[in-house]
Image (cartoon, rainbow, N blue to C red; front, side, top):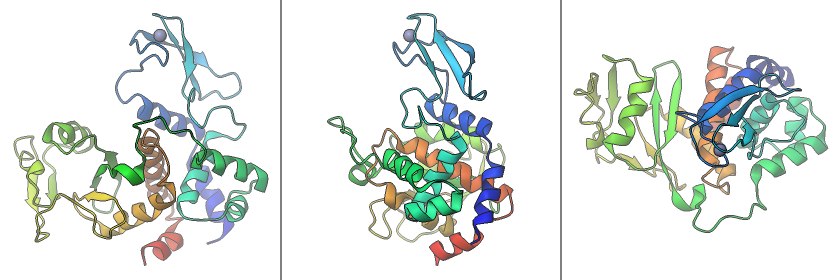
Length: 272
Ligand SMILES: [Zn+2]
């Protein structure tokens, strides 16, 4: 893979989209105040140096915060898209030196970023699991030859997956799933439904013993294989951050699809 491929990729991902992504994952519904959890939050302009970074103000407690407040991504001079790309290539098991070369960054900057993202020294709050420990189920929806949507699930219930499917899939679409009963109500929700026989009828299984339970919807094994490879170096991260990390993965993966299959060679190497 040529270094220029990754620089092209960086061109496909602009800061506005990255900030929109962070917002969407922090506040999937309405923005809540980070201080008092109130919903009485109004927009309060943008960051002086980063015009895509939305500021918010809480009318209940007068608290002020912005898209990145309280995240590992706050307070750094690199554009957000560089962080997102750095996170993505970290998951591909590149060394810091390789990442620096591929992204055209200074090695010491990359070192600081990857340390921050890996959060090894993060003082874990008691009771908060890591990806490795708690093995959350992950729901994946993939349009054949198209975009991918995946979500970490709090539990494996119909009420949990219904809004995710409703938001991501047009009614009337034919959905292939495995045989697990969680998908039994798809026809009632307005979708075509065919089951793929996996023989054992499991909804979530850890096929390769790596600790991840894959909930298969329209199985494209190559995608899960890539996602598993990508998640492996992130196993020590706290589960609080996992949805955002997964969001980044989905985002870059889809950007790549929309672009020129820039990671093609790399992905072929990972899946093989
Ligand atoms: Zn507040």
